[in-house]
Length: 383
Image 1 (tube, rainbow, N blue to C red):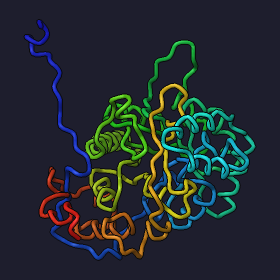
Image 2 (tube, helix red, strand yellow; image 1 turned 45 degrees about the horizontal axis):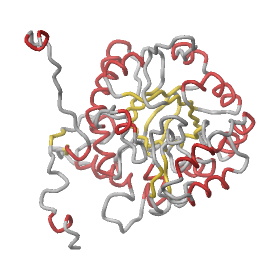
Image 3 (cartoon, rainbow, N blue to C red; image 1 turned 90 degrees about the horizontal axis):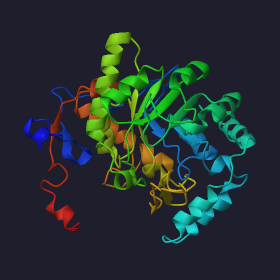
Image 4 (cartoon, rainbow, N blue to C red; image 1 turned 45 degrees about the vertical axis):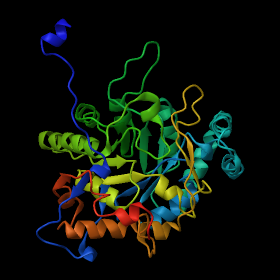
């Protein structure tokens, strides 16, 4: 009571997600064909600013090759089925066929199989033979063991990701990963995630990382927000982390791109993420719907198999179309879930942005009615 009387009570600030904001068109418009979508990580340039999430229902070597040929970067999960089983297809089929009541226990059992080091080399070598960049991901506790194996296999970009990642971690009796040492000893660009705050982003950038994943719990198959109560809506999280990137660049001259990770369902969400300050985006469930995805129309969070505290769920996403249709069209869908890059190009064009950096300067407004205003016939299903 004394603390409250002295005025030291906790105050809350408003945070915003994709459905609560809108982009303001520019005073000049640009032909979508003249928009440059390229994105650079270290010495590598992607023709589209899109990464496919390191999730077992999304990325396998075949998907990674096709996605890479389309200009994006698919990240292989080294903690997943592709490195635990010689023939993961059998396990993917079992997951797809499991009932909703039993699937989490099935996943927990399947992921108890130890990682086989030789499979890391086999999977990444297969991707490299496809003529595309190879990217791989693992959790911080496995990074010092798996990264050297991935580098030996020719990986081009390495990702270290967990539900929440910070530059400083307190642990008694356990050696934790030092990102400073890891980035210095790793011969390829290191992307790290996930975080949502200015302070955590700034500290991670100071360790030498090449890129930062932004987002805690927004993914369609993730339940961290419900289980742990943590997370910041993606627009606010992206704005805060982008501010850290810009301040760090002004101070050091080193630019660390940020990648908004998760929570985007359509072209409008992707456009808003870029306008909020992202240099690129990472998505999972939209690609889990591709004909080429290994999940057979299902998707699950990578913390779902956790033995003690699952923080994900298997969801049925269905098959939405080919990867070509989802990325570039053509499409007859009107909900923005296909031709994502066409939507981004058009949005950038009407906002007067020729590049990703120019799109980041687009004005945004708080607009909680943006998806409902004037849409009564759509909302009532009268189509």
